[in-house]
Image (cartoon, rainbow, N blue to C red):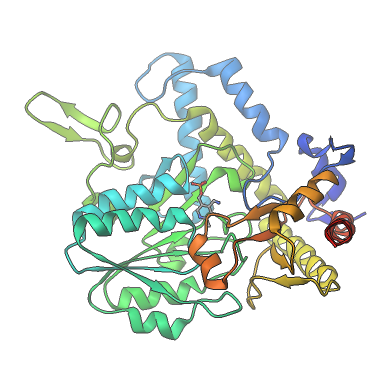
Length: 410
Ligand code: PMP
């Protein structure tokens, strides 16, 4: 029996009740983890526990339920501080996810500090959520968006990045791990180079937090963002980490309750960090559940899950490369568990539909990375992405499923 850390794969799979079901008469094979991950019972139960037992609004209540809800909510902040190795809880801001975190930085930091002809650098492999907010703010401020090219393997060309950097560069915003390719970008080097020209760096950790250990202090990242739902936690909750001195300089992103110190019709003063950026009643239940999901993952151990996921990726790549019809998109030297491919003469959507009839869930299309697809001159890919609850037998089913795809489309 295969084990991951101290746990058998069977016991891990039992922690994810959704996996135990049939789709189209076949056992579900869930290979769409880069889109969203499944949730363990600890996370699901935490949400009902909150609503069953201590639902109350946080921070201002003095009754027992409000105090319990506040304490649990703030414990998650401490958990995230430790998870990212941040210096203090003030640096952890809860948002809806990566998209909102990046919009917050663009609208607050970008709108305040970008001047006409300043430059913002992103890469060719960014998710739309790390493109569009920068396009919007650059247009508004007369700033220029620069794009780092990638090579045919799907790796950032570092010499081109170096060429783009100048004293005009104010912000560099880069994905840590590509959702479409699986590439792990050399963010340490990117951060170091960007800092040399005085730019701040945002790292999109949407795909990296579940696979790699993150130390924001060692990285020296100015901002690091992630979404709970890619980390075995609920949708609708995410994080913005920022360096304290930078967050302090930034104006609030939204106005309302919670983010204020004092309000009068003449003048409002703003709350301290992190509350300055958390206007309104937050997503309390899912914030608390975020901690439960992270604690669950840490019990198994990210080194253990990452090593196992890597074995799955290697096995899948080796099996699928037996098909001459398959071309892999994203063959970087450093990758996590994403296997993106195209098949000659077969539309990715057809691959997805035929595999679904076998109970296999993969993602097809542009993966919210249209400029990346344009770079490879393709409309989209079929993408199988793995988590530690997946198995080698499931990859064998994918292999058989592809046989059916070839049979049915030839
Ligand atoms: N960046 C990357 C690399 C992603 O994979 C995703 C989600 N697919 C996002 C950003 C956006 O995350 P969310 O939709 O959770 O805001």
